[in-house]
Amino acid sequence: MNFQWMNQNTACPVVEFHDIRTEKFRADKYLCLVETRFAPALTAAGVSTLGQFRVENHPDRLLLLRGFAGMAGRRRALTAFHASPDWTAQRAESASLLKEQQVMLTRAIAPADGVRPIRRQERLTLVISELRFPEQIGNYHLWQRLLLRKEGLDPLAAFATLEAVNDVPAVPVVKNRAQHFALLPNDGKPPEWPTELRGMLRYAPEILTLEPAYSLVW
Image (cartoon, rainbow, N blue to C red):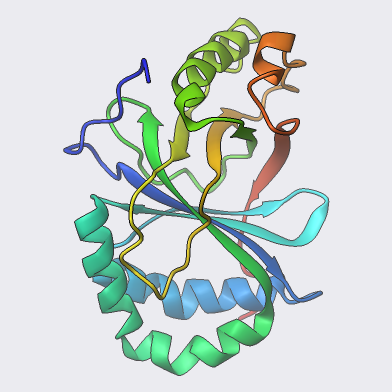
């Protein structure tokens, strides 16, 4: 790859994307559980809650971002969280609210000074790209960034699949998929991908509009 991975000494170089589909009309209940029971326990265990979002036009879909100082820090933090009374008490209820959950384990590419919690009022665009081959991610990232900058959509942050052994069995992660994630300001529609970029992908990019997620159930 011809780009620099983020320095391990920066904030949250390892990030989990939790792509969640709740049972119908249960997204608010699940968010309430996350905000009131899980978020405090995750923070106490050493997990950084970077953002939680609703996906526009998908009322039962949520996206949660969790950050870690590294893989060893991730193992320690999630082991502590899964041993906490909050997780033990609410695990069954959480499972009953979920229809599907995919966790993508990624490593941050940008910004260079580290990933920090996203301001809760920010509305964002997320571009998810799945590449044919992992070794293409470096070139894809650079060419995509140039394309988006020309349109005034300079990415706020970018991430790529982290090929590493998942040493937290309680959090299964997606395997054997080379994915790139770009978070953009919601200032306009991303342009059409040129042929050279489309040729690197297995499918057309998935473009999602993200709304800051707040629980409406208390």
